[in-house]
Amino acid sequence: MKVKVLTYLEKRKILNSKEIDRSTLVAYGNLYLEKGAVNDALDFFEKAHFEEGIRKIRLLGLNEGDVFIFKKASKMLKIENSRDDWNRVGEKALELGKFRYAAIAFEEAGNEEKAQELRGYMGRE
Image (cartoon, rainbow, N blue to C red; front, side):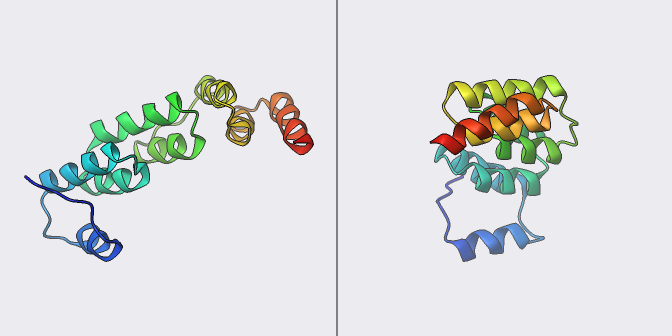
C-alpha cells in the first residue's frame, strides 16, 4: 500500500473516518514515524489500536529523553510509569542537554531536589 504525507485536512478526515481500515492507519503511522513526526504517528497508531507502534514510540521517548512523547504513549497504553522510569527519562534528557525535559521528568519521579537544581541551572542560562 502506497501512503504519502497528508495535508492537515486529509489527516483529520482519515483520523475521523469510521471507514478506514487498520492496515492503512498503521501504514500512515509508520510513514509519519519514519519522517520524524512522532505525534502524528501516535495519532494513527492510537486510532488503529496498534499497541506495538505505541510501545515503539514510548521507548523512543525514553531513549530521547522526551517527556511529552513518553507520557503520551504511556497514557495510551494505560501504563503507570514508575519513579525509576521517570528517573531514566530524566537522566537521558540531562545527558542530551534537554534540561527542561529533565526537570519535568525528575519532578514526575518525585525527585524534587534534582528538579529544583535543574530549574536553578536553567534560570542562570
